[in-house]
Image 1 (tube, one colour):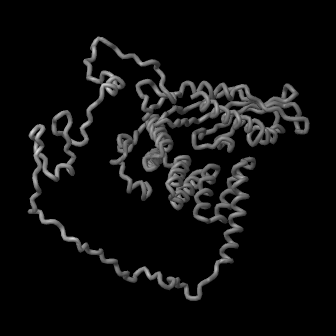
Image 2 (cartoon, rainbow, N blue to C red):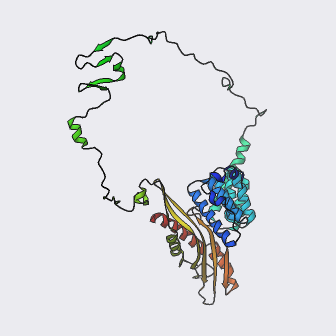
Image 3 (tube, rainbow, N blue to C red):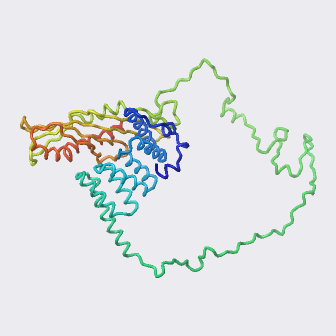
Length: 421
C-alpha cells in the first residue's frame, strides 16, 4: 500500500467492509472479491472519491499482485490527485508486471510529462508505439513530447545564472521590518453618565407610560395598544389577497399519488430534489454492446494484397462487467466497465482460404476517451488454412481494418448510452 493509502485509513472509508475483509482462499472467491473491489473503485472514481478508489485498487492488487491493470489504475488515481511521482512509480510497476501492456506505458508517460521529464516520457511513449503502431493517441503524444523537450532545453539555456545564487529582496520590501501601526483617535466627547435619569411623559388617552428611551426600542400605539414598532396589522384588502392561511387538518383517507413515476433528469418522483439516484443498466448495456459489434465487417480495397477479402465479427463470446446511470444533483454520470472477448473470421474470394480467431479488450470503461481507441489484450488465431494469410491478419485484423471498426462501434455504443439515458 502506498504512503498516501496508509495516511487515508480505511476506517474513514465507506468501503471498510471489503477493505478489512480477508482475501478468499479459492480462485473463484478471489475472482468475485476482486470484481467487487474494482466495481467499487470505478464508482469512486466517477464520484471523484479518489482516496477511496486508491484503497480499493490497492486491496485488489493484494488479491492479484501480478495484475498489471490494477497498478495502472492506481497510477490513474494518483494522477487525478496530483501525485505525479506516485503515479509514475505505480505505472512503472504495471509495465514491469507486463511489458506488453500499452496502457501502462501511457500512464507512465503522462506522469513523467507532469514531472517535466519529457525525454523519459518520449522514450516511454515510443516503447508503447512499438507495441501498438497504429495508436493515434500515442503518436500524438510522441510529437508533443518532442516539442516540449525542445522547448524545455531552450528554456534552460536562456535562464540567467546568478553570480552567487542568492536572491535579494528589493529595497523597501523587507518582510522582517516592523512597521508602525496607527493609533486610534480618541473621542473628546464625554459620554453621558449611566446614572442620568430621563423625564417621563404621560399619555392621557390610555394611561400607558413611555419613557424617552422607548422610541429607540421601537414601541408604538396600534388600536389603542402599546406594541412593537415592527408589528404589522393587515388591512382588509391584504387579507383578501392572501386568503385563508389557517392550518387545516389532513384527511387520513386521502392518498397523495405522484403525477408521474418519473421526475426530471431521469430521477423518480420520490427523488425530485435530485440528490442521488443510480439505476443498474447492466442487462441493457450487454445486449446493446452485442448489437453494436456482431455482424460488423471490414472489406479490403482493390489496392490491398487480397482485394475483396472481408474480416467479420461473428460473436461476442464474453461481456463481463456492469453499467449504471446516476443522477447527482441534476448532473448525469455514466458508469460502465466491461471486459470483452470478440470472435472474428477472415475470408478471401477463394473458398479454401479463411481464418478464425479472437481478440480481447479488457478495459472498455469510462476512463477511455471517445476517439482515442481501446487497448487490445490478447489476440489469437485459432484456425488458418494458409500460413500466407498471417501477415494479412496482423495488418487488417489485429492492427487496423477490423480493429478500427471495433473501436468505432464501441464509441457508437458510448454515444448511444448517453443519448438513451
